[in-house]
Length: 291
Image: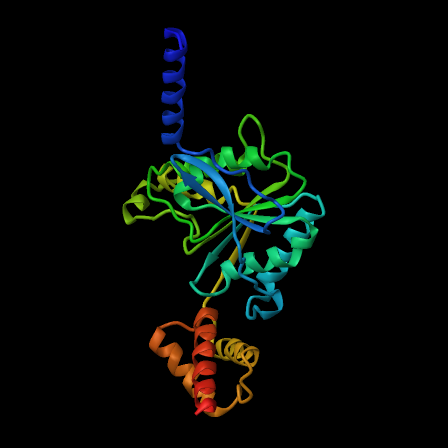
């Protein structure tokens, strides 16, 4: 081996060792493997990871939110039918079915090409990269942001505003954003901001801080508000889930009393509390039957 070949061999060996230390490129999404995906990061690079077992939720099992169910179902049907539809903001009391409704419409329309991409709040800065991946796909995509809220100055806030209204390139026709939050305006509101409010000829004009916070939620075309359930609604939901778990005495006085006590100790009459009670009671009943 001459000197040139020796140098070339050492260079190839060095390149191989360098390549082994470099991060592997993100995998291409397998669109046939799932109906739901998550945006993940690896070595600073984002990629879509298939959700192996999406949470199955049926619209029929969600009680006490009939109006909200009707509106999100209608909007999603328009979307999968390739008709104009709106981005959706679901806000209100905790445990009232906001996230479950999004999962339910995914299951309802997955066979019509609907897919869901879950994006964490901290990764919203990657929305342009995500929409670029989805832009030419034949499926219809919901970008889903759960429990969304921002602190002042977060970069994801600006990225979401651009994604909702479009930038120079315009929004992707096959992508909508569905977000859930306990806050109507998605950002904390402070008493001092009320001092910015002006009164001109008895007309009230909000200050710039309030206008800025309202401007993000205004970009969602459809607002769905959720409220805490009253006692009868809570009991109805609990009984529905008890029957789902095979409990035969779901309407008995004893079960009713236990369900109310459960809600009292949790400090919440919500659909989530009703579901948790039903699981607990069905489990306890099942254990007694095995003795």
